[in-house]
Amino acid sequence: MGQQPNDLTPEAGPWHRWGYELRQYRKACGMSQQALARKALIDRSHLGRFERAERPVPRPAAVILDQILGAVGALIRGWDEAARVATQDGSALTSSAKTEPHGANTRSHGAIDLGPLVGGGIRQAVSLGDAMDLVVVPARIQGRIRFVPVPRRVVLATGLAGLATTAFPATTATACTELAVMTSPFEHFAQLRRLMIQTENLIGARHVLPALQQQLISLAERRRNARGTDAIQLLALETRYEELAGWCAQDVGDERAAHGHTAKALDASHITGDADLIAYVLARKAQLAVDTGNSADALGLATAARRTARPGSRLEVIAVLHAAHAHAVLGEGKECRKAYDTALALLTRADSDGVWGSWLDTAYVNTARARSLAALGEYEQAAAGFDNAIALLPPTYRRDRGVYLARAARAHAGTGNMSLAARIGAQAVGIAAETGSARIFDQLDRLDQALDPAANEGDVAEFRASLDRIILQPA
Image: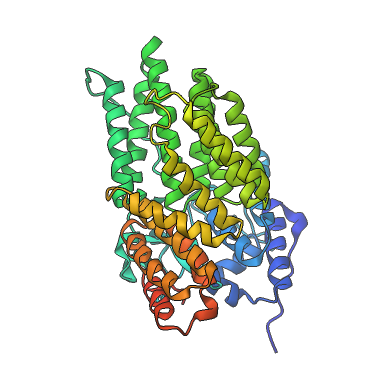
């Protein structure tokens, strides 16, 4: 006879309510704690303590549990609300039996404690100290590739050392006791940013983000000690650093950090009062929104970006492009095509000041159009567009090549040419392994699903085997 589960007391406090909701969603899915723990890469005993509000719940754990249980954000929103309420009323995280608060060492709920997680092939529990040093890595969860926080030691033990380079959460600021003497701090940090942009595309954001975050801390400290025009210039540059950090965080699969950095960039852009900078960050927020499944929000943000952009500027073109893709993802083909026609017309008479959107040209617009055509299910035209884009892409755009290859492969799979899609996808797998790019992994996940009907074909089987070699597999 199975063990009777402990009664829960949702009325006891915010974390008890969250644990109750977790159990309700788990039971609705017909899953045992053991089954859910395996899929979420979380130790089963910790999962039980989450339900009983006996152990701090890391937010990344709430995110992955929400995804697996199909809670559509309810568990994430519940976690945020519980954290807010607990902070306001000083709620201690205790068991329903009125035991001592978890962690007699006075560790609060907000402390970084992700508990023992389990990675592919690693069945022993990881120590608490190991679990606090996390990296966000791709793992196969319920047949799909998802980015999840895993202890660095677990990742290293699987042999996927290349994925163990970016810590989670982001680097935190430390006290700066003395600022180095610089002839031109603005030019120094501007040059560093340019170099990091180039390096990020070549070797992947996973290898660049830690240095970028550290430079962002130094830049913020420098800006706080500046006055007048210098302070304004440094704040504008800090805004662009935050936007770049958001881009890189998204590429390592940390969507929460991506939204956080981009939100900070938008706040700072309003402080500068620079309309171009505000329009630029609004456009980036639109791009992030559509990439993370919030297309309706993306459309509103893109509209705001165009409204803010100077008429005749390249920023206006960028805003229209993001609106066009949002229309495509929403299934609004007519509006999408009209927006791309508008973007091309605007581009022909846009200024070329070299600051905003200097990379914009007809080829870029056509590549963006190919992505939207794929979203609309028009795979023949999308495949042709991506094939052309790959042929024109400079070799230094290594990560972008991987993204284009994966998107091209998905488009070819949509046309029914599974063998060609698998061969192109295999090339993208190699770049995904080099860069650890979540953008590439996301497209490879979609390709993997599209190739499922041809799983026994040689090229498809080879592609899937190569993909499985570079992601974690739950024990």
